[in-house]
Image (spheres, helix red, strand yellow):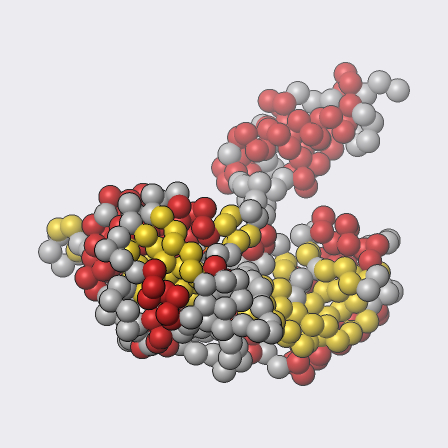
Length: 429
Ligand SMILES: *Cc1c(COP(=O)(O)O)cnc(C)c1O
């Protein structure tokens, strides 16, 4: 049977009062695409022609973006492919509140131009009193590029061969630094570098000594590295890339470096990410010596690397507000995760699904704390359920022939959403 003649025209469908709010919310283009897809289904006879508007409405995306929110049940707290740290409610609210116009660079008291992002920088300094000053750029890679350009372009950065790391996805720190016009002066060997190796490499052309936390791997055995304290005695600044963004030591992560300790040990500058263990938005944090940071801020490149008002707001609220989800997730005990996994599994099993609570081992991820296993619990489902769950934006991990939904990386507030997404995805599975 030919349904083509009965399929309503696009204009007629778009005039349907049920679609008007969607046009107002998402724009005509997205709604039109949904209508076109529904018309196609009607032409193929998969839906009756009278249902085109309803089908378009059903298939409409929630947001006007191709990028969509997901539930991270991978057990990896900082999953770079899933957007790293989830923001706290305070940070989300703060970012949304300044989405319109805001006094990002305006002094409401005088009516004149004000310092950009003053609140976020003050919060950063308050959270890390060991730092004389702070700056924020787009990410940690940008922080390193800015430091290398402003302090070492045409000069040398002295760095250990054991710390020339690949950050991920083919991005290598040495390439990034060399792209600024600084020359890398590699010292020591992959497994051992001493303070004397650094000292022997210094000269009038030295810009700074760089210490990089090898955050995404561990070398064991016959190893030694010069500490920041060892290097602080050298007559050049020490820049320390600590990676994960811990501002103070965390007893749960004894091997993870933190900004306060690095600065107290004598680092002139510390660089770190905002969206790793700090639990905030994507940003690069620069902490330390006020005069050096002022040089960085005045460099033309700073203008190309600065962050927007929503990032500044989210960062400030992360620093001043309640502990962000990543901090809570990291410190959740295995017992609490077990209780959540058992409740969820029992619920799903009562709906006839093959679900069971099992012990599972999560990870910090995002190139932080590579050796640390976070013992917890997961809901185990048949591995064959993975594509259906992924289609419903539930991301787990397949392990030992099962799909694990590891609750370590999921905010407890999202447990009901996980439960209903799993039920919907696996209906009739
Ligand atoms: C993650 C990481 C980076 C890159 O940080 P981004 O914020 O992703 O740019 C650089 N150095 C180290 C040691 C890291 O762990």
